[in-house]
Structures are given as C-alpha cells and as structure tokens.
Image (cartoon, rainbow, N blue to C red):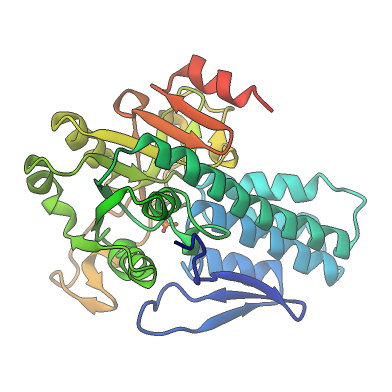
Length: 334
Ligand code: MRU
C-alpha cells in the first residue's frame, strides 16, 4: 500500500510560492500565489495555509521571497512573526532562516526547501513510530486536520493514521468536524477519502457518546506548541477529547516534530492562545447563524495537560508519560 499522499499544499515553482487555498477545499481547488513575505503572512493569517508545520514552511519561503527581491529582512521577519501567535514552528523556522546572516537569496531559498523536505522526512518517521503503538484492527478518533495539508507532506497525527493504514492496522477513523473552521469535515475527511481510508465524520459534541460505545481505542492529534513539561496546545476541542479519553479508558497520542517543542516555556499556561474574530463563530461559511449582534468567544487553541497524554510521538522517538524529565531526555538526544 502506498504511503504517498497526492495532496500538495505548498509548492515552490517559477520563483513563486504557490499555496493550495484551504479555505475553500474540498469543493474548489485554487492556488494562491505569494510573491513576498507580506503575501505569505496574509496567507497564514487568513487560513489559506494552516497547520503548525505548514505555517513554519510557508514562513521560511516567505522570508526567502523577500531575500530574493532584496527587501529588508528585519521587516520580513517582523511581518511573518505577527501573522499567527500559537504555532511555535513559525518562530522556529524564522529563527533558522534569520540565523543565516550572510546568506544570499538563493541560499535562503535552499534553506527553506531543506526545512520543507526535513518536515516530510520527520512525518514519515513519526508515522512509523506511531503505527507501532497501535494494535491490530484499531479504531481511532482524530481532530482538526494534521495531514499533508497541515505539513510538508504525509502529516503528523494523520501521518500516523496513514502509516498505520499502510501497515494494515486501522479498522476505522472517526474525524471530529472541528468547529468553527471545519478542518475535520472539509480537510481531514477529504484527505482520508483520497487515500481510501474508511472515515466517518462526527459532530464535535458527539465524541463522548461515541467513546462510551467502547470500540475507539486511541485519540490521535497534532500540536501547535509543546512546553517543557509536556503540556500541549492544539486546536480548540483537543482538551475535552483528552478528558473524555481518560474517562473512558482510551489512549491519547500527540504527534509532533521536535520543531513544535518550546522548551523556553515551563508550562502550557505560558502559551499565547490565538483569539480569532467572533464572526467565525456567529457565521457559518459567511452566513449569519446566530442572532444579529450576538457576542461570541473564539479561542483557536486549548492546552491539554501532560498528565492526560499517554504518548508524544516525535521523529526522535516516543515520549511516554510526558513530564519535564521525559521531554528533556528525548530532546537531549541528537
Ligand atoms: O488553526 P489551524 O488549522 O492552523 O490549527 C491546526 C491544528 O491545531 C493542528 O492540529 C496542528 O497545527 C498540528 S498540524 C500537523
């Protein structure tokens, strides 16, 4: 069975960054062209491209675009850093690019390509590690979109599911629809169906009832930032899934490359949580569903405490029972 996903979200061609517009998938397939760091920042902010690793890769290419055009790289850095606050991969990628102080545009483009390629390789490795944790004929639940669309390719949590499917271990995947942007309904269901992996979409609020039935063994999710103690920021709704998984005796797996760790932060309480416009909650794809002028809150991420997580799968290996000690021990390797 092929591991290769046909979905390409980020492509560099003809000196231009091409992004598949994820706001209108799965029914429309359009590319957005970026010619500058400012274009790339707009694409990140407006959700053309999303998912922590994909945001980092896009920022790296955006930085390279301004280097190739001879623009001020301090401004490029600033513009990109202000696009979205929670995914640390964005800041990691910018730091890595900015560290090459004497590099020319072509060398910075080569670095962006390396960041892109390394992410794909990390995903394939995590896919293997994660698959090994699953038993035969496993039914899993996933949240948001963590696939080829959210990364350089293959995916983090969805990469594990894809690899486990290739290993013959997956019986069924439940995908939470993921209000308000519906990444689960629009993107994850689409990616899994492209690969012929059996998936059922679930309203976010149906997870508890589903878990009580007892046939779902693992919740598998990605991450936007993991702190020194193993707390995990991920798409809003992840924390409730972790509580539900523990209550129902299920396992909870986080899959993220080492670029998602932020060891400068002691715990999840220190992670900046993006607050997005309330109209994303009061409207559904542009159509007002709540009463006019209705107030709403729209935190885009939540924090799952390390104590609710059974395993964090990285490309360097698996952290079981995450804590300050187990996170430090794994990241000290390599
Ligand atoms: O708001 P989004 O769509 O960028 O949020 C994405 C997530 O929360 C993903 O789970 C996370 O970035 C991991 S993606 C491999």
